[in-house]
Every structure is written in structure tokens, then in C-alpha cells.
Length: 459
Image (cartoon, rainbow, N blue to C red; front, side, top):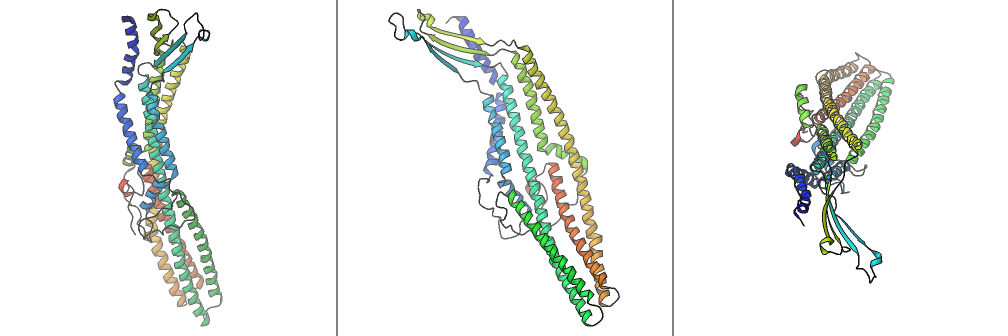
């Protein structure tokens, strides 16, 4: 092998060294970080089990335990995790060379010929891409894996929001059932008072009959509420990846509303910009698109192949062993220019989508904050004015009926008004909890889990 042939054979290996130098070490470190994060998440998954979830202790169902159970068992999170795993598996593929090509040919007429030697050719060839091509391909794969990781985090946030909101609904309907029982007993007492008045001849039979009608309405409401509770239990069990008819522990008899202090909108928006996984996903998609542009531009340069060959049909031994290089000729300029234009357009699209996501996050945070403020105002209105006034009204109506100063209808109206306001108050409390969870989600916080944000609550 002369000096020129040796130099030509060394070229591909120099190109291969250039492929892996520079950013290769940094890519490997980032790849290992993503692999480690994926393994940690896989260890916390229990989605393969079909056993019913067992909540710790014999106490009530707490928000945090429900959220954590959903995040450990929900198959939608497992699907997002596997999408992350699949995207990460693209990186070693993108960074690898093409398979070495081997070929074998023979001269069939020489197989049994006594006049010529057996003719065969053995050929090996390895192609090497343009310098930088593997590096940019690896960058694209890593960026797409990071985007899938961010999508996985977004699914976690969404599932936590769903679990927290269903907890509020479960608590609300359970509280309404308790209120229904309290008002049933109150109507029973009112009916007994009307019977005393009727037996004493001070009122007509209309009063106890009206109480009986109101009692029938309360019993009907209880049937509706029990059906609503069954629906909520089925939805929670669906999130927990178990049969919809399985019973759940009762919620706490009372929960504290979320903290009433709310930061300024600008501060919350800054927090969301730093925390939202949707933004990280869009940023990763933009990095992938930018690397795709650089990858497309590398197609203008030729790719080189290194080959070695043994040909038995040459008479001289020195000619039987051959080595050389090959390269493609990038003559299809229009196709390559089109690929670059497409990649640049995709990159500009990714940049515009990133700006749109950033705007959406800001708007979402501001809207969630305003809804939280509205819900807080409604709860305070019920706590400080409406409920106390309604309770005072029914006390006055009951005293007035017993002393003959007002009609039985006034007492029934007062009871109905108190019942309606107490139902609306429980609705407002549940709405406040859900608005708080939505604000956490908008900020990029895992709601209901005290270790990662959200709010604590105790009976």
C-alpha cells in the first residue's frame, strides 16, 4: 500500500473522530441524566398492578394521598413515560454509523473448471457521514427526548389537577348529603311543631301537610346526591386504574379552604414561565428544529466510504487485495435546497409556537388568578353575611310561628332559604378548591402535594 492509498484510507477515520469530538461528551452526559431521571420515574410506577389501591390508615381520604396514588397508578402517565423512553432510545440510533456492508460474489463457470482458477470477490465497505452530521442528529434526538420528558411532566400536572378537583367534588357531595340529613331532621322538628299547633287548634291541617311535602323534596334530593356521589367515586376509581364500583374512604368531615393570600399576577407569571413543562417542551422542540437546519445543510457535503476488497481473479497477488474510498456526489442541489428551506421553515414555526405558548401561559395564569379571587370573594360573602343572616332568619321565623306572629309559610321559606344558601356555600368552597388547583396547574406546581407546592389541609 503506497503513501497516497494510506492517506486516502485515513481520511474517513479522521472524519469519524471529528464526528465524536466537541459536543459528543456533553451529549453523553445529558443522555445519562435523562436515562437516570427516567429510571427514577419508572421505579415509582405501579400501573401494572390490578390490585385495588390501599390508602394508609383507617382515617378519611386525604387530598395528597389521592393525588399520589393517581400519579403512581394512572396508565396515561405510563403512556407518557413510554413515549419519553422511546424518544430517548432514538439518541444512540442517531449517533451510530451505518452498518458495515459485506458482499460476496463468485464466477459460477469457474467453480468446476480445470482451465481457470476459482473466481470470487469479497468486499467490505463502511460509509462515514459528513463531519458534524452525527452530532447534529444526536442533538435533534436529545431535544426531542427532552420535549417528551416535559410532556410527561405536563401529564403529571394534569392528572394531579384532575385528582384534586375530583377530591373537591367528592367532598362537596358528601357534605351535601350530611346537610341533607341535617335539614331532614330540621323539617321533622318543624313538622312536629306544626302538629302540636294543629292539635291545639291554633292552625289548620295545611301546615303539617306542607311540612310533609317539603320533607319529600329533601328525600328526593338525597337520592340525586347519592347518585352524584356514585358517579364521582367511579371517576376517581378510573383515575386510580381500578374498578369503578370499588368503595373509597370517606373524605374528611371538614377541610380548610386553600390559603387566601394570592401573589401579584406578574410574579405568578414569572414563576410559570420558569416552571411550566409546556414551555420546556416548546423550547426543546425549537432546539430540535434549529439542529435540523444544521443537519440539512450538511447534505451539501459528500459522504465518504472506506472499502476493502479481495479479488481472486487477478493473476498477481499484489492486485488481489484492494482498498479505497468512495463518496457520493451531491449534485441534486434543488432537493438539498428544498430540505434546508423546509428545516428553516420548521424552525421559524417552532419559534412562533414557543412565543404562542409563552403568551398562553401568561393568560392562563392571569385568568386562573382572577377566578381564584372571585371564588375567594364568594366564599367570604357566604361566611360573613349570607349564612349568618339565613340562620338568624330561621330562628326568628321559628320563634314567630310558635308565638303566632308569622305564618307557617314564612318558617318553611326560611328553612328553604337556609338550605339553599348552605348548599351554595359548599358549592363555593369546592369551587374555591378547584380554582386553587387550577392556579397551581397554571403555575406549573403539582397541586395537592405539599412537598412540591399546592396547599395542606387538615380536618
